[in-house]
Amino acid sequence: MGLPQRIAYQDQRYPYIVLAPIGKKNKYIRSIGHKFERGLLSRLNDAIMDQIDAKGLDVTPIRRYLGLEENAVLPVSFRKDEIHDHLLRPELFLWKSLPEEHGLPLKDEYQYGTDYTQLSSEQLNDHIGEVLEDYLFLSHISSEEREHWLKKIAAAFQQHPLVRLYHQKQQVIDAVETMNQSSLLSVLNYPEDVAYWRHRVEIVMRPFRSLPDSWVRGKEDSCSHDKVLTFHSSSRTIRCECETCDFRLYYDVDVDIVRLSEEYDVERAAKRTATIERQFNEVAQQNPRLLDQLAQLRALKKQLATARKTLDESLQVFKQIERYQRKQEHLTSYPLLDMYDKLSRTYIPDCLESSELLWMSEVELHDIRILKQLKEWKKLVPEHVYPFTSHVLEELKVKLEEVRYADDDIILTVKGRPLTFADTQQILDLIYYYGTDHPAHTLVQVLAGKATNKLRTLQLHETRWFGQLSHWPEKHIQKIFNQLEKQGWLMKQQKGYSVSDYAEEVM
Image 1 (cartoon, rainbow, N blue to C red):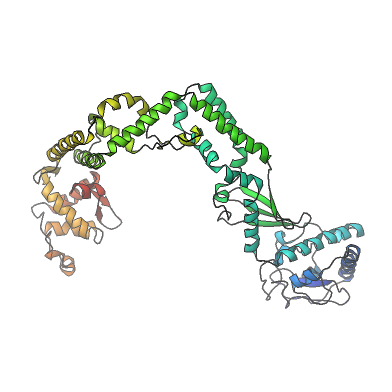
Image 2: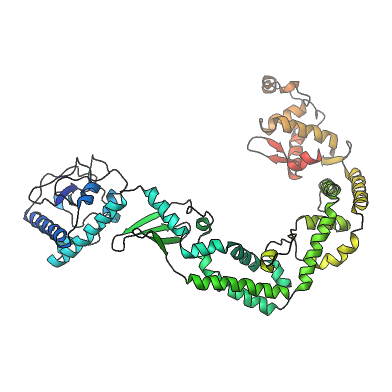
């Protein structure tokens, strides 16, 4: 790290300056140049000395940072034997090793924007003072690795008053955000109160929404994305920015705290969070019928759970019937099963919390319309659930046998030639074992019983599928593959075919 010694050049006439070539093609400094360059270097050297004396600066850390000896403090770059008119920023040397085989990088981001060759003596002194402060600050930063500062920033972020409030109120904050998007709001009485509550949510949640989830959820670290660090010596802060999170903050190196881009009144945020919870609870308490309906749905779900095994099997059989019929059936023809299916995708907490907000935020309804079905559902569920559900299962099993394919069922027809389910099974078996290993035309030859040299080499003529469709014209067998793919039995792959999930389930 620091200034590569191989390219560094010092002249005793300018003891506070170290010269370095800039630009990839400039490998060393041949000479200091003409009278203008010598006069400018003299002015720079005097300005550095004046600033050190006037401010009583200890520039030893800068020398250590740059790896310099004796009195040299500031690097000045030359470009094609001419002095470069912009000083180098200290970030150029931070946490990196620069190559010694050519000059320093010629990049705007590593140069000050000020053309110091055009400055008056007073302006030059001020500029040099700012540059030295930057170098002193970066020399302090360089005493630790980049990862150290990132951890310090993350730790200080977690101690920020707003972040600490977020963790204290996280359960309420999450509940507010969940309820703000909940379909339950549409069935609450007094919609004007609900609308007012949602309006207040946008105001109350604004401070917490300014904190990226990936930062606050970790509770110790920041997000995992790359970050850009920018250093401000005047305020002795590090600006940390994550472009992915669209988030930035400022870390004070001396007092170990962070400032957010926009600060909020944390005490007011705490009061508003408590208020928004209380206001929702008041709205919910004006809806005893809804609260009772949710409790009844929970009770129905528990009642049906006593026959869970039978009902789950019934649903599975029902889906098999759908697959055989190759169309979507409606569970409404089996009301008890329809109710169980919807309630199985519904979650209602067992206990009503002291806060209706916290309790209702955990409610997950498959469809808000089930509240309207509750009255009819209550009539459906007998006192003893199991016998009734067993009857439904038996009824479904009978229907499954009716729709299940028989070996002689016709699956498809090609040019007047029927393909039975038994033949389809054989084709699917062939595809299962060899479908992705060989192209379609090879599989067609196997089924046609065409003993080519290739099939003999692959020993495919010895398989049980060889000649399975020898009574079919070879060109029609290829059409079988196309139709089976179109009907969802097969899936086209880069090489050959594979058996679909549907086919596996039916087989």
